[in-house]
Image 1 (cartoon, rainbow, N blue to C red):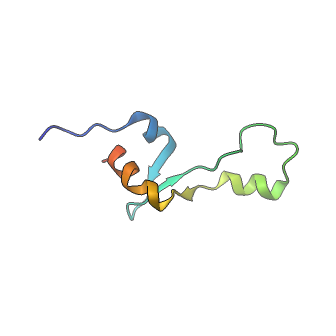
Image 2: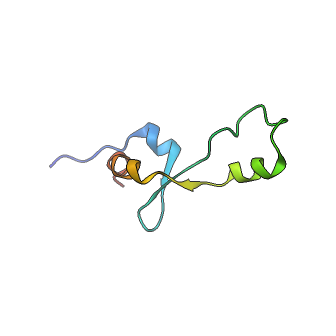
Image 3: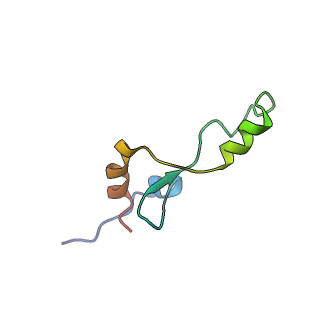
Length: 64
């Protein structure tokens, strides 16, 4: 069996938790931040667990 390669684009965007779930960063936090409330901007810093429907594909992209 050959070694599995990590999908490099996915490895830069997603991280694995200790329990094996995949977490992602939130969208809409890069620019045009002046019109967004402080409370929303703070919540955009936090990472969130990726959708259940995408977990299987993401786990295949990030085998290690």
